[in-house]
Amino acid sequence: MKTVGASPTESDSALVLRARGGEKAAFALLFSRYEPLLQAVCHRYLGHHAGIEDIVQEAALQALLNLDALRQPARFGPWLAGIGLN
Image 1 (cartoon, rainbow, N blue to C red):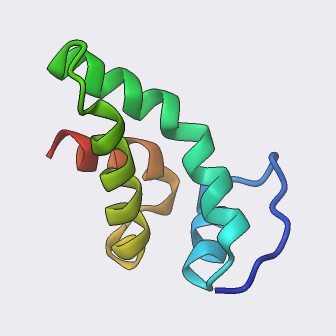
Image 2 (image 1 turned 180 degrees about the vertical axis):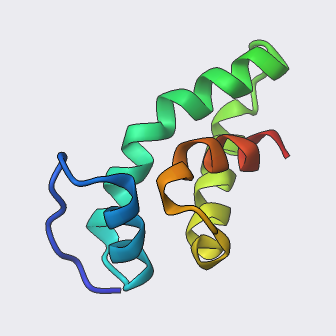
Image 3 (image 1 turned 60 degrees about the vertical axis):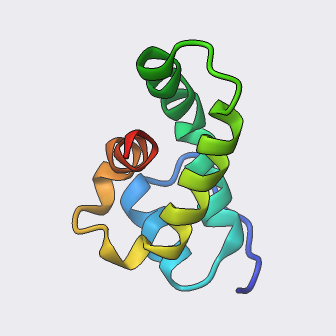
């Protein structure tokens, strides 16, 4: 993957397309946008479980590995949260 700067004002769809093209910064920005949502969903579902950080890391990895499976790039946030819950 190549590393190119990502703009915080870019849409999720644009960032997903760039991340699919191998831009690490685009995926990093996407993940940073939605990590709080993922954390909140996991905490709500599991309570203050000690393994939530591991779940968040695993969800990030699965999202990165399966980014091509995301049919609606504008819905990256809910998709990531769903990965965390599964």
